Length: 130
Image (cartoon, rainbow, N blue to C red):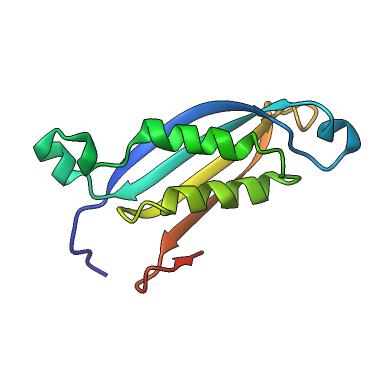
């Protein structure tokens, strides 16, 4: 399928957020670090030509919204956190798709981290789809 506009990528890499997440009682009592990565597919050509922040996805604002969401403390699974972060990313109609990776450092003995990665996109009708 040919796209009518270029799909560029914007990324936020290795954003460390301190939050309460987990299913074990000890995980629910104190914050721990999670690492968030997002890749957004969107058309950045207008911002590239105009050099105007209003013509692009503001990654500083996106970072603030992701941190606020993660720190809300309502997530038990990193899967649900990743899903919610994807929703935040797709709330900007300029974003065609979002790949979200959330990792918990030290969650699995012997591994640097354990995590999930998901891709979500807008359907033709503008609804999110998997």
